[in-house]
Image (tube, rainbow, N blue to C red):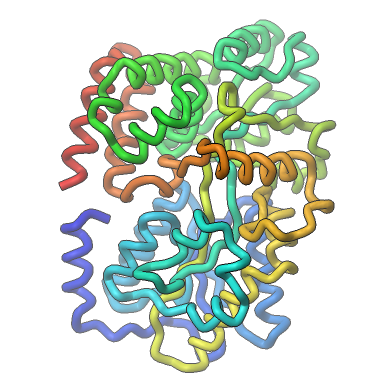
Length: 419
């Protein structure tokens, strides 16, 4: 949301009544957890709310990695009719907070001890102007590589640990008659692969400079050009049917043994789990090639909108409390493929991928390899993210565009969007 958009939205809301379509003692929740594993995870929270006597009005909006849902949310907010709660992430929490539209969750946070429960990097994102306005649902790791072990065995390759090994394995998988890399040709999926390849080839320090700080020298320099060239090489490992394919369909290609690899966040694990597969046996997981010492995080959260009805506010407070309680944190994250937002929970019921994810999250937080995902709205404003998406996707799909030109366009796009 640009400064101009924020101003427009603020003016539009100035005379609007902030009333939602949720009834008393009920919450209307806007989210984009719509694939098999995600929908099953979201239903856990609905059941917990209903068990305490509260109503849940589901407002699920599929598509676009959340872009479609954000378009719908802005439309609802413009009319003075936001939902009770919405799945909002990263910098956008601050922007909605600046508009004065988010409710205060400090009473719940104080009663439940959120300051002690949550890691600082998580808690900071949930606050606006020192006040809790959102509650974290989970922590996703984005820089994962998923693989079908039978495909790898048929091709005579192992899980790659570097980009060079990844490209070599991909060629062997193709020669064995499989699709090397399952992918969906959508802007956010292109950006997901791009940021993992950049991180794997150039490291977390350069990632921070380029995709978080938007340093023009980093965005337009030799390291970016190298990263873009590596990124373009991944297209050679994909099949021709990728345009418009949803991410979970790409995951199904790995599950079914059509493809060997997928570069995707750990929500993909929810699809493996829903298919009844076992980590380490039926499918493999590892940090994206070259990113073993880094962790690209994406935190799902529910922000509560300011409401006037006391009973609806009570339902919101119950929702916020339930989200961080162990019952939901465990059930949701087991189904979703992510790890709990609170690191104090027993992880014995989680699979080896999740246990590795939590250990890596804590380690990289201490060592400096923890970075926010640009592709998933954790690093920069939505308008800047969209400008980078455009450059990345256009370059990816234009065989004749040199990496140098794409790097120049990235600098221009980031600078233009920053005003």
